[in-house]
Length: 444
Image (cartoon, rainbow, N blue to C red; front, side, top):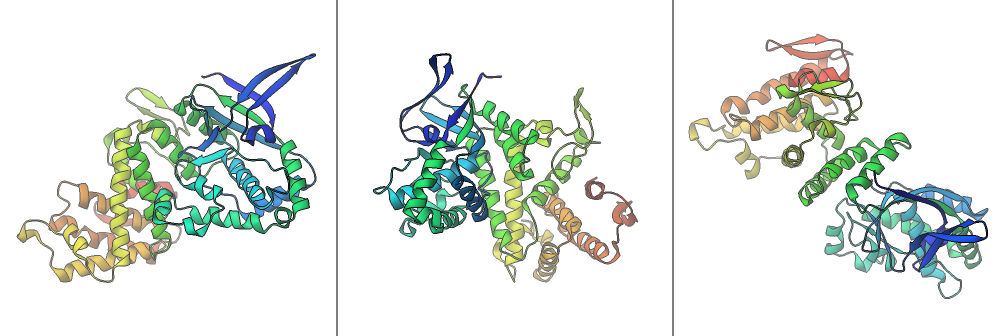
């Protein structure tokens, strides 16, 4: 483990774009323990969670600071040799505080002594710092800016910026001055990993958030994914998946990102003999100890740690992107498109599905995807994996598997009352069990 440096530091020194020294008193002497150089950059790496603060969070923070300086918690950073710091923990606070300081600077720079904040960059949104510097001027909202926003958060940041500008404590010069004075005297506990190692930094991030304030399951999954694989390809695949899921949220398709990931991995892993007996939950943590090739993995080991195969994870996210894009295309199309027709037909004329049958298949898939029931959609994921990547997926028999899936969905919709349907020798039967076993039964 790399050496960690920890020191309580005032916000003004930590966030001001100037040369700063933070020291401790040793009797009558002062010892400098941390030097911060001018023009340093605080960067939010792309394994970090998305912005989650709302106007209510900001209003509560401002109201709290009005009464006096406060301790604002821990900030964990990884220090790099190029005068930049990656934010491992505390990015929500630093982002919001940077925006508050920038708003006050923009409104009152000439009239009060403001804190000029250090530059804040976001790896998944490269034009963020430009928008902050220019006050989120709508004239800047070009196609280039939108494309730089890999996780489609620009409107969240814009709403936060506008909300800050509308606060009376920010608009009023006298109140803004008091906010600046109190903010400057607020403090952080700064913890710095000086190893210049992002993998080590992500490990700190996971440890802190698993043992302290809980991250969303999606955030933890992404963190493990990016910690194990620092390449550009996995990041681009993840951003593509997030983009498709954002489109799903505005469509009639009822499928969440976590359900998509869970169903794909359940299907793919449970068809592999190497993972027989392995069980994980919706949090992607093992539900019980699991032994593979002489290695025992403890309960609550993360699935990505168990798989330990970057190539597999890249391939899985890439395939899930293609499957999800196809499903979205079916949901959004009232009639059969050429893209859909090509997917469901073989090059051999004798194996082709005619247009009438293809239209029925298209309608079945659309109905399943628009329904709120989870299990039939899990079957559909398995269907698409076999269709697109199986050895005989495009055979007539393979394509017509959708009829069995649709029958299953109808039975599930009409009969399910606390029981589950499991396939036994080709026949659906009912039994009571957990949601996890319900899904496993589909894939085994």
